Image (cartoon, rainbow, N blue to C red; front, side, top):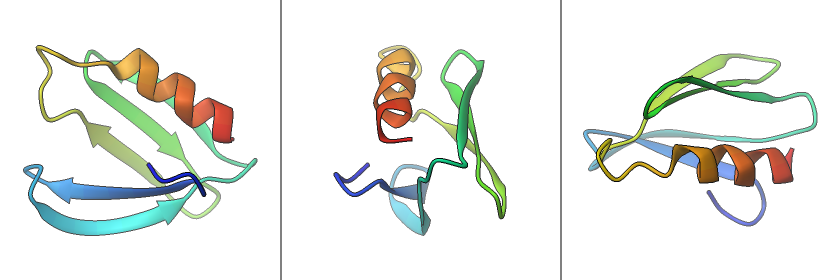
Length: 68
């Protein structure tokens, strides 16, 4: 995630798939260990951490919620 709230997401951690920006209308939820759901006004994104063993998913959610 960039400082301006842009989130880029990748397939298999390598191949760029797309990006979106966080806003006050977004919601970030922990779905399961290593998986989060980000709801935007336009779409819901389901994101998975590449390395679930060393996942810092709670830190990710905290940082995302700071931006929101």
